[in-house]
Image 1 (cartoon, helix red, strand yellow):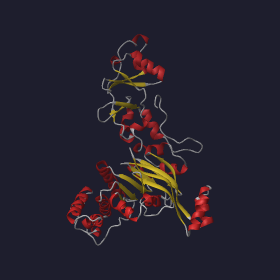
Image 2 (cartoon, helix red, strand yellow; image 1 turned 60 degrees about the horizontal axis):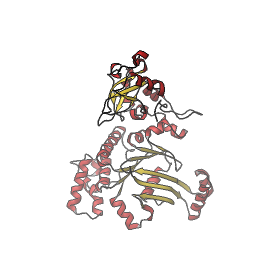
Image 3 (tube, one colour; image 1 turned 135 degrees about the vertical axis):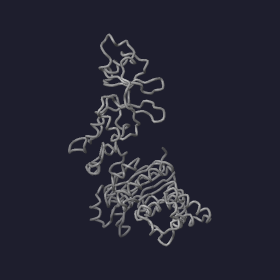
Image 4 (spheres, helix red, strand yellow; image 1 turned 45 degrees about the vertical axis):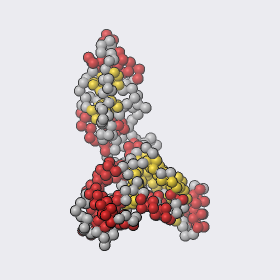
Length: 413
């Protein structure tokens, strides 16, 4: 995945004067905290030396409590707020080096923003709201009307083009805000807590619709939220902010399994781990298979030499056709027989993307779960009932202990 947005050492300081801002930056360089800097200079460091990379086509979540700096950060990316220092590159271009004309062009064509409060134009119809950016860009009426209708259909607002925003529900207004952002066909969407004002059921619907749209459009999305459940549902990566700094970045399962500190633990404690971890995140993979042409001696060596307690038997296409446990191999006199005569052939298969909550029912069977590629059924690894139960039973980090998460697997790299 190529890097779409690269942020390096980005800071934003709000101060009464250039002198107070310079003093705040100097204290920041000395390692002083946000509160100390405020007390001594009267300046607020909203974002402090933030660096991050957003891959093309991913949803990158930035979350934290109120006042953590997340909304300031996203507005610095397109210079709705002018940063104090640092650099932002979009497709390798320095955003901070652009003049006013270049910046307007970037906002009109490459980067769109969706706000929490919808920011709709109440005196314009639904279609006119969607067309507005295209009109400002100078597109002809026929072209922008066609694009507006296409985009409204994309977000499920067919038939509402001649209504006004006041006639729409909250969820429909947010769809309209999203349609307006998409109408310009931008590469990047900046979304600042777009669903936080919605009722829980409508919010869940909008999250699902965003994921469906992303499957089709593959935009690069930077999404601000204070809701960790929303972050793990939508995000490919999550950056957690506190007092203007990023305290941890990772994939959802990484943050839940290995929280960096108690601040992150507090976000993860009430999370349904079964909806975070997948078969792919807990499976045993390295050295967990043998060929169906093998004999029981090969299986025995795997058990004894590698410390395995289960191996899958694969056909010539790399697909699982059975499995063996150590007890299935038999005694020394049986080691010469083919594995096909000793293996069990009934076992469930799941994809690596299956959440543990969806495969929990398999825990009441003795058979391991083969994890296979969706496309060709090739063996990727396996998951045991014990793996599932241990992962679901793990808790947040206790004082003095390592972060909780899936245990290390035998034979897994």
